Each structure stands twice: as structure tokens, then as C-alpha cells.
Amino acid sequence: MAIEEQGGLKGSGTSKVEPATGKLGVMVVGLGAVSTTLIAGVEAVRRGLAKPIGSLTQMGTIRLGKRTDNTSPKIKDFVPLADLNDVVFTGWDIFEDNVYQAASHAKVLEKDLVEQLKPYLETIKPLPAVFDQYYVKRLTGTNVKKGKNKRDLAEQVRADIRAFKKTVDRVVVIWAASTEIFIKQTAVHQSIEAFEAGLENNDIAIAPSQIYAYAALTEGVPFANGAPNLTVDFPAMVELSKKHAAPICGRDFKTGQTFMKTVLAPAFKARMLGVSGWFSTNILGNRDGEVLDDPESFKTKEESKLGSLDYIFQPDLYPDLYKNLYHKIRINYYPPRGDDKEAWDNIDIFGWLGYPMQIKVNFLCRDSILAAPIALDLVLFMDLAKRTPSLRSIGVQEWLSFYLKSPQTAEGLYPEHDLFIQSMKLKNTLRHIMGAGLITHLGLEYYD
Ligand SMILES: NC(=O)c1ccc[n+]([C@@H]2O[C@H](COP(=O)([O-])OP(=O)(O)OC[C@H]3O[C@@H](n4cnc5c(N)ncnc54)[C@H](O)[C@@H]3O)[C@@H](O)[C@H]2O)c1
Image (cartoon, rainbow, N blue to C red; front, top):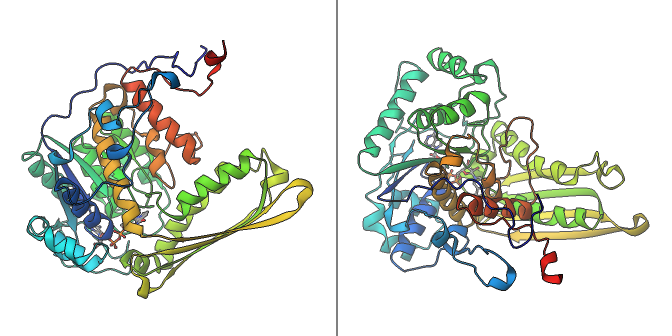
């Protein structure tokens, strides 16, 4: 079917999206720098103290119809999203600090703002976590659940979710806890039965993040993975997600360096410019940096960061341009900078007749300031997916790749990393579920 810019193809997922009535409960795994910046930030926005910059759900618009129609409502007015005033937070952590203490420790937000929000932040106290130091070597904590096996721990998380559900109308779980060690899929990940047997036998390939995900999905609750761990991207979780109509997405918030990479690399490829080398290094001094200083956690992050260029450049299709690309990534723990990460990229490109050129990118970013709005959008969109008949039972929400470094896809499908393709995919998904015309940017109708 011909699809025109004005939206000749109507969205077919028009069975009605349920309204966002009542309270949305957000359960955050890990109340560290990202989560406390998210929670304090949402409260600051609710009180009119700051603007939700960086959040597409709060600030973004979506064009409907032709360019000449001048119709671009706010996304939150076009799709039924939970209102920030209806969002209620809770979470788990291995430390007993409440969110005020954890935010003070993280030192992302200015002291003045955190003090102003203190009475609210103090009320959010972490539930005991599922934790095992084998999976995050650099941490030890005392606020940890005890159980006779992993099945028992999963049941305790399910009980936490059920108890919270009684106080709100809907629940979403998001992993914003530390990066676990690199784990490969094994037989235990291949089906629900194998996974449940693995929980019973304390299978070593089942990390705590997988236990939370299992608990959430079994309770019919969507689960988003903001870290690079193997958590929901294996067959047993996809099966569970479909079975319980509980959407999943992952992995790893796309915030700083990879965000820039997935903007620049598509530009080089669009212009058929070659790339011979891409060296990326970072200094980072927060707890995340400390955890990533452990080689096993770094390996998980490295794998997640490496994938994007290969997929964008398609070296098999363009051997002359990208076959010999040398791609290297380093993360160095450097305490003086705290959450203010500095990233450098040196990119060796080549143009006409093979003549070399260089590009340097120096991004002085704030890690959690970039991550918090992504976490917010993910929970609001995952809640929307759960209320959308054509999305809730499909498992992986690939349309949320926009937010993720290493996007999960249907089996056998390569991920789209190009930020602008991801953005188009996201907006067309919203148009589709609301029955509006899709936009392809063909635009020939203006020249009839
Ligand atoms: N900030 C970013 O830009 C960014 C980008 C992509 C991914 N991430 C990922 O997000 C995650 C959070 O980052 P952060 O900077 O907030 O880290 P952080 O170290 O400040 O916070 C993580 C928290 O998780 C807790 N935790 C660890 N294991 C847990 C478990 N099993 N159950 C409950 N809590 C647990 C820790 O105690 C800590 O409080 C990390 O995995 C990081 O790699 C962050």
C-alpha cells in the first residue's frame, strides 16, 4: 500500500487504549544515583520548581496529518499517559538509606533542592533487596532478603509487588540497580519450565535481576531494564511476558556516549563516509563507575556499548567503508568527578579518494541528569503498553529502542540503533495505536 506523508496508512491497532485512571505505582530496583534523581526530579516538577527537560513524554510533540495541517499536539495530550501527579514511587535497595539519604549521598542534585524535597523523599524507604555479591563484586549491603532458594526469593518479591498493588491502580517495575557480571544464556533461560527449575536449584546463571523480572512478569507487571545485564532478553522471559501480558524492554539506558554515537554514525553512513577507527574513553567517579571498575561488570557494559556501530555501519554491505573499523571503549573509575562523567571520542574517518580526517567529541555530561528522564519515559510508556491491547501481549516493546543502548528485538531480528529511525518508530507506534495516519516523509502530495 502506498503510504503518503499525510498518512495514507491508518494505524490498525485501534482497539481502544485504556485510560490512565488512578495511581501508577513505580517500583524501582536500586535506589541509587539515577533513581533518586528520577524521584526527586518528578517531585520537583510536580511542585513547579523545575521543568522536565529531556523527557519526551513531558515536553515532546507529535505531528499528525500533513505539514500544512499545523497539528502537533503534545505527546501526553495525544496518548493517555499517567499524569505525574498520579505517580507513586517505591523500590528496593541493598542499603537502608531512604531516598533523601541516597540522593544526598549521590550528590547529583544541588543540596538546596534535596533539602526542599526532604519531607517527601524521606518517606520512600527501600524494601529489602534480592542480592548476591557474586553478581556485583564491588558492593555489600545489609538490607537483603533471605530465602531457602531463588524460588523463595522470587516469591518474596512477588509478595512485595502484590502488597504495593493494593495501594495503587497499576504497577511498573524498572531496573536501575548496579550492573551485574556478564552472564551468557544457558539451558536454564530457554523456557519457563527450565527457568523455574533453575530457581528451585539455585542455578548460577540466574542473577538477582532475573529474579525481580520473573516476579514482576508473573504478577502481570511490565519490566524495563535500564542496565546492560542479561535480565529479560532470553526466551523464558519473552514467554512469560506474552503469557501474562506484561511488556518487557531493555537493555541499558542510552544516555551519553552511545547516544552521541547513534547520532553521528548514521550521519557518516548516510553520506557514505568511511570510518577506520573509533576510540571512546570515559572518566566517571560515582558508584556506578566503582562497580564498572570490576572487570566482570565492565565486560557486561562493554558488550552493550560495542554493538551499536556494527549494526549501524553494516560492514558486510559496505566493506570498503567499514570492514576494518577498529572500535575500542574504556571506562575509568575516577572519584573526583563523581556523577559528572567526561567522555572523549576520537573518530578517524575518510572521504573522497580515501583521504583521512578526524573528529573529536568531548562530552562533559551528567550521567544521572541524562538518565532520569529516560527512566521516566520508559515507565510511562511501559504503562501505556500495558493498557494497549495491540501491544501488551507481544512481549518485547521494540518501539522503545530509542531509549536503549542495546535494544532487545524479536528473535532473529537485528536491532535498529540509529536514533532517528528509533524516534520515527516510536512516534509511528503512538500514531498507530491511536488510529492516526503514519508519517513516512514521502510528501509527493504537495507537488501534485
Ligand atoms: N546514569 C547513566 O547514564 C546510566 C546509563 C546507562 C545505564 N545506567 C545503569 O543504571 C544503573 C544505575 O546507575 P546509577 O548511577 O544509579 O548507579 P548507583 O550505583 O548509584 O545505584 C545503583 C543502586 O543499585 C543498588 N543495587 C545493586 N544491586 C541491587 C539489587 N540486586 N537489588 C536492589 N538494589 C541493588 C545499589 O545498592 C545502588 O544503590 C547501573 O547499572 C548503570 O550502569 C546508567
